[in-house]
Image (cartoon, rainbow, N blue to C red; front, side, top):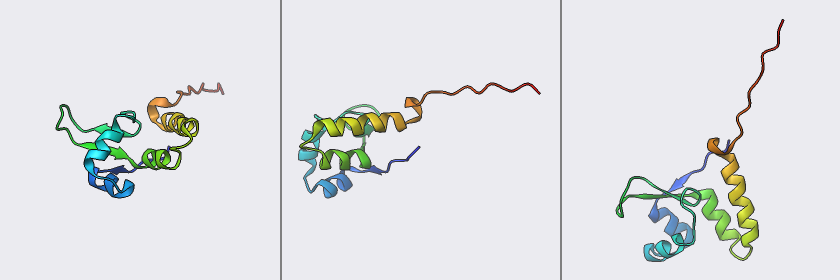
Length: 92
């Protein structure tokens, strides 16, 4: 499994060269749990952005079908997205 790096709002704004208000607008088109996560509940909960998915979105803005493949690959890379393998013991 590949681990993602999380970015703060300020770091994500630096990466995208935008202001926090613009980032909030972009977040409406993004998927929680794929592009960002909330660290708590409520409107003031801190938000962390998943760097590899933000970069993938940035590169593939004009090719949403390609970004969708990236989303599917990201989800499969998570522990929750992997199929559990059961190994049978060989009798000796």
